[in-house]
Length: 369
Image (spheres, rainbow, N blue to C red):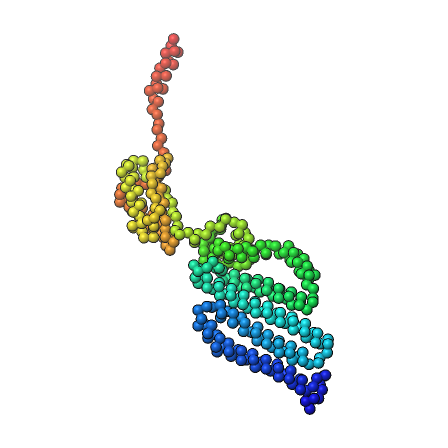
């Protein structure tokens, strides 16, 4: 019975081939149990995370590789005809190459996810910092490159020339780039924003006539919530071409005010005013002592000008602190008897009455003669 022929092969040969495939399934099951029960526990306890990444990426490709090898052996020992054997051989070469490509794709993406997550949690540890929105783009781009290389290698292995195909893809890529150049510029600008860390979501930025809080950074555009609560959508390439001021990156907010005192203020009172200004940080905690400047800078048209420069801590409310400083200046100056000047003009009128009388007398004398 075992010697009975079906489709050119005996029942025994068919049975052995089927047993080889079943054996591969059993081996895969054992590998899966070994990985989950032993290898995974060992790698999780290890201080080195790279072994965990490697075995995690290796798990499924090795199982697929065992199945492909079993199918190859099972089919190769059967008499299926020259043409079918040739198709199976070429298919096997393509699938093995793609399986290796799959392993590298899993390994690279797992490594990037680990490194990016590690450095985002510890910015001081490395320079590889990316916003979470950029990670899918990086992974997708790398996967496209890896799979393209794998497909080209698989086609070369079976004797298919890819030179003409690559030339066609190159011409198509140029045409696509010309048709979608604005989109490409926006995507490139988005990548540059992420990689250069020009600003992040939540930062207050200012460029051209727009100022507000960044609420979203996409690959095509950036959305900004202005101070009047309007949502402004700006193409990324325009942001990259503009002069960007990242307000949130400042260590402290600099404020400069000019105070004008009346011209009857004595030098001693001017010095007292400057002393009051220099003591402002003692009254208002959000004003920094460092870099504070209060100087008598100029003689104005109607006032003696004091320039007061101070810095507000980054964590403070800017507007509330400015208001508190202004109230403290007004209170202290009023208490010290220092008077603020306001725009004024003094007009001097010359008394020409005597001069006009003398002239009139001279004219009368000339007429009498």
